[in-house]
Image (cartoon, one colour):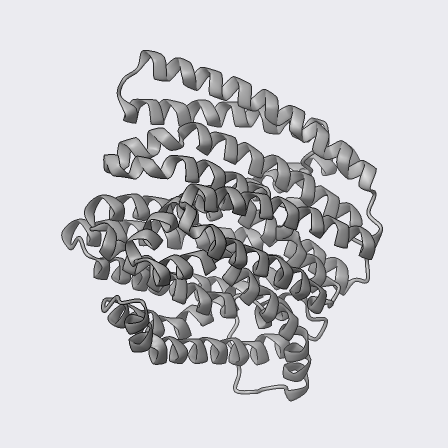
Length: 484
């Protein structure tokens, strides 16, 4: 009987994991498809201006989805008090973020010599208060551990927005169609998340909870802002020193790489936040879960990196103009950069659960400074040298993260190394099988679209086999994906 119950829980956990990957994959697939379509229909200089506007909009997103968002998930206060107070707090952050975007729109357009930035930033500014409501509803779903419902909403909103975005872009191939797509995504998400959340905030506000949330959030806001500059500082440096075209070129390579790795990195981060936060509320230790998420992050990120490195040149040759092939070496290095950040990605949920956000902020301060200094130094050497340098810094940041985990929680380093070694062997097997069969396809098939489709099918089949082996050897544990 107990074995049957355990198997049922494992199947449900596996189903939740699959749903998580579908939900967050839809977000990355949507972004990837829109990137490919925009790059083929819009001039690089115009698209570079839009991507620069997205960088500023991501600044607002960082504020909305951190700090108060994490407090909503992890607070030990009564649900009703937390829900209502944090609704007004997160909405206020969204309103302030939107006002800041509106105020800097014209000065930013002048500083980066891109007049298109002004209307784009005004448009993003209007969307921020509504995006904040979506963030609050998402935090409530995470707090109640309704991750299945959360990922369902995410998948539906992203796929619906993709249909709207593609239609707009084909009818009206301009950067303003991309802005309209963003507005459609926010509108659809607002309806779906609020309908699923079913929590109505009241006109009450707990000053004591707000003060506690502010104290809790300061370190997280610092961490996220430093992470923002680590991720997007290069874009700003290239756009300021050179032009939006150079920035757009790097941004496309970086977007392709990060979108692919985030297919697995984002759901793992979401589940880590849920597990660590729940353990902290119950005064439980979560060292084992930390090691489990670390090995799973390494395995899944490595597998995706191998897949996109194999298919990347085919993808770029299929959807981009010939001059974009210069992106390929940088794309390879950036795939490794994002894959090697698997330990760095756990810093925020780990220290958030321990209510030691200052330590997480210190970690991000060090490595953000390293990324920005490296970007300024290597930018004149070309995007490949820049990407390779970022790859090395990413590895060092992950090693530093595990050193911090060990010093704070005395994790079993030998157990972790054993898991990572096992994952490496499985990844080597996956890589050899996938890349060799892909080579056979490239040799015998000359149509790039056919190669891409068949290569994705091969990768999917080999990934199922590799994941099954990883579960058997406990590199990946389905139980960390349990949800209501």
